Figure 1 (tube, rainbow, N blue to C red):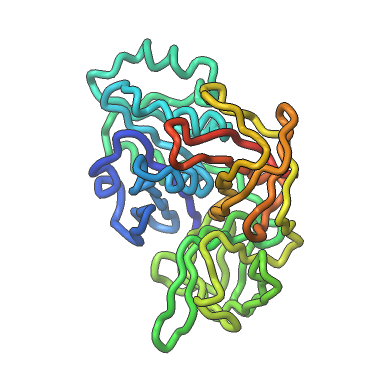
Figure 2 (figure 1 turned 60 degrees about the vertical axis):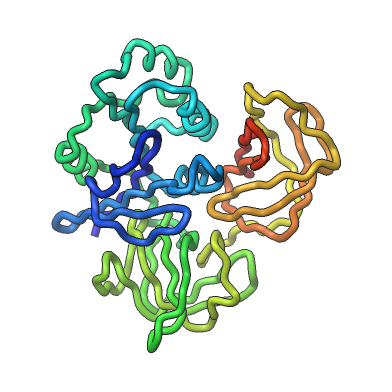
Length: 309
């Protein structure tokens, strides 16, 4: 089974139902579409813009971005800024008939989205395009599966939902539940409600786990048989938001999002683009993962983005 995760951004009310069957829904909502041995999972940041976290989660989960624009408004600014600061260069704009294309092209001309395709709002054509997209995958690496939801199923036990970011996971694999020291065994694997013996990078899976309870889990924990990094203090070189109207100072408290992990932090030191953060609890990450520093109560909520080493 080939899998793809597509982020839905912009004016997305009612869009998900046009593209797939509604699945899990919390602050992010999934819509699933399957054709033969290919499946597309659309993820919508449902509680955005009230909360910034769902937007960042969706960006971190997706392989490809679809930005729906009915008209160019200031409200789109934060979304476009976030996509640019995360360096998103795979995606398309789906535009309404009243959108000024010259204005849109001018807005994105100096961003990571400058080569996004421009598509019409034809949902049949979009579904076909998405189901046939080819994304380069890393099947040979260690397994990495960030957990986005988890629950207990009677007679099954602990079940987690997540996307296999890289590697191939198999039934009976023993995986560490980062950032903890605990290990869980994969009892069974489901992809779109069908049982499989293994799942590969790109697949969205449901894994039944043995050896851990839901009380020990949290969103953003990562299942892996590789050597991820675990930290409670981070020193990073950050790309500050150019529209930020304040200076981040030592002693201030903010929040970071890494993958699907959201953790409060305090600023220990700031020197230009270098910032040292003390975290409320440990996080796990892989080299190349992005850290987003946010101030959820401010008008400008995204303060900066850094690449972890």
